[in-house]
Image (cartoon, rainbow, N blue to C red):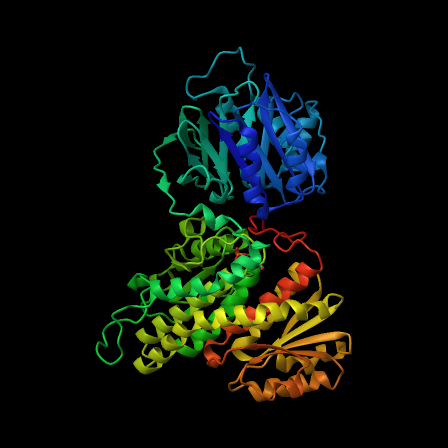
Amino acid sequence: MCGIVGYIGTQTAKEILLAGLERLEYRGYDSAGIATVVDGKIHSIRSKGKLHKLREKAEKELILSKAGIGHTRWATHGKPEEHNAHPHMDNNNRIAVVQNGIIENYQNLKEKLSSKGYQFLSETDTEVIPNLIADLLPSPNSDTDLIYPSPLFKAVLESIKLLDGAFAMAIISSDYPDELMVVRQQAPIVLGFGQGEFFCASDVTALVPYTSTVLSLENGEIARLTPLGVEIYDFSGHRLKKIPHLLDWNPMSVEKQGFRHYMLKEIYEQPSVVRNCLEKYINKDWNPNKNLNCNPINLNLSPELYENLEQINILACGTSWHASLVGRYLLEKLANIPTRVQYASEFRYAPSPITANTLTIGVTQSGETADTLAALETEKQRRKDTNSIYKSRLIGITNRPETTLATIVDQIIDTQAGIEIGVAATKTFLAQLMAFYFLAIDLGYRRQTLSGGEIQLIIDGFRQLPEKIEEILKTQERRIQELAHNYLEAKDFIFVGRGINFPIALEGALKLKEISYIHAEGYPAGELKHGPIALLDSKVTVVSIAMAGKVYDKAISNAQEAKARDAHLIGVVSTNDTNATLTFDDLLPIPEVDELLSPMLTVIPLQILSYHIAAKRGLDVDQPRNLAKSVTVE
Ligand code: F6R
C-alpha cells in the first residue's frame, strides 16, 4: 500500500520522482504528491486522484531541485483528499515526509504536539512525523552533536524511536538540502545506487530504468543518502556495513509492450511462466525407468524441512489463498499429507493449535503482504523455544524472492513468474499452482505415495500445458471479448466448481468482482442447494466448471438445478464435450486435460472473461478502486 520514491543526485528530481511514482501507482492511487527543496524552502505539489493529475500540475512548474521525495497513496487515515495527500510538512515547512504504513500512536503524539502549539491540517497519522522531527531539530546555526552524522539524522532517529507501528518513510529538510533520510520498520523500502545519484523506492520497479544496483533496507534501519553516497545505521545509531546486490531484471518487464492493460499482458505471459517453471524445477535426469534414486523435482529445499513431516500448514490471503486451496488438494491427494489452509489475516489473532513436525508455507505474490508476514512471524515466534519436534520450518512461495518474505522463512520457492503489475493477480496465481504441483510431486516421491509411472504421467501432462494455454488465448480470447458484451449490465454472478476446481470458482468470482465491480460469489457446486440456490432467477448468471473427470456428472446435475431456476448458465467445459450445449447457454471451452491438471486451464477463460467485462465497462482494469497490489498494512 502506498508507493514512496526519493532521489538525490545530479539530475532534476521532479521527472525522476514522477516517473518513479508512475511505476509504483499499482500500490495505491487515490492521491499523490512530491516535495523538493527550492530556494531554501520545501516546495510541494499534491493532487487528489490518479497520478496524471499530479503530473499535469507539476508540468506547469519549472523545478530544478536535485533532491526530492514522492508518494502515491492508498488511504488509511483520512479520506483521499488533497490535504491528506503526502508529502506532509511541519508547521514551518522545514521538513517533508512521505510514509507507507500506519503510526499506531499518532493520536497520542498529536495531543502532545498540539499542547506545544503545533497545528494539524490533515486527518492523517503521518502528519505527526514532520512535526516531531521539526520539534527535535536544532536551528541550522546551533552546535552539531558529533556522535551523529548530521543534526537532521539525529532528529529523525530520535523521532522514529517515539513511533509505534509499521512504516517506511523518506524525509527531506530545507535546512539540509543535501540529505535524504530513509527509514524502514516493518514496511518495504529499497535503495538504488547510481553514479553520483541515489534513490529509494517502495519497490524496485521504480528503480529499474535508472540502476540495477539495489539494497533492501531491513527493519530497524535508517539510511542517509547524500550526493556523495549512502550510509546505513541501525536505530541505535550504529553504522552498518551492507553490500548492495545486482538485479537481473529486464526493464521491459515493467512495460505494457503494446497491450492495452498490464492484466492482459500478464494473462498472455502465462505460457512462458509455465515453461520457465518446468525448465527450472523438473529434473532433467529424471527417468522413471532408469534411475529410481533421482528425484523428479528439484526444489532445492533442505532435507530438514522434509524430515518426519506430519502436517503442512499454509498461510495466505486473497488469490494466494485460493492457490493454497488447490495446493491442499494436491498435497493431500498426491503426498497423503494432512494440510490446513488458513487466512493469514485470521491466523495471527486466532492461531490453530501448534502441531509437531509441521511445515508452514507462506504464499504471497508480492512477498510483502503484512497479514501474511505477520502470520509467519507469529508462527516462527511461538515455535522458537519449543521442543525440536515443534521447531518451525518455514517456506515461502512467491515470484518476488528479493522481498521481506525471504527474511522470515527458511527457504523460498521462486515461482518464476517475475513481477506482476496489474492489481488482479493472474500469472502469479498460475505460477503458485505450479509450485504446489511440484511440491506435492516432490513429497509424493519422497513419501512413496506416487509411483514413477504416475509422476511421469503428471509431468507429461504438464509439458503440454503451455501449448494448451496458447490455444485458449488464440482461439478464445476474441470470442470471450464478444461474449463479454452480454454481461455488461449483469448484477450477480455465482461461480461453482467441485473438487480441485472449487478454488477456481472462488478465484473466478474474485477476479470478476475486483475489476468489474459486479457482485460475484464462488461456491462448491454441491453447496448451491444448501442456500445460495434461493438467489437464482433469470437475472443471475451461474458459471459452472464442468470438466471431464470424476465430478463431471455431479457438476452437470448441479448446473441443471440452476437452469431449472431460470439462471443463465455459462459452462467451462472441454472442447470435446459435445453435450455441453444441452446444459449451458454459453460455453468457455478449453482443451482436453486430465482433471488433476485442469485448474491450470480452467482459470484462464475466467481471467479473460473478467478482463473483458471490466474493460468494456470502461473501468481501470489495472488499478481497480479501493485496491492496491501490495497490501502492506494489516
Ligand atoms: C486478487 C489479489 C489479492 C491478493 C491478496 C494477497 O487478484 O491480487 O487478493 O491475492 O491481496 O496478496 P499477495 O499474494 O501479494 O500476498
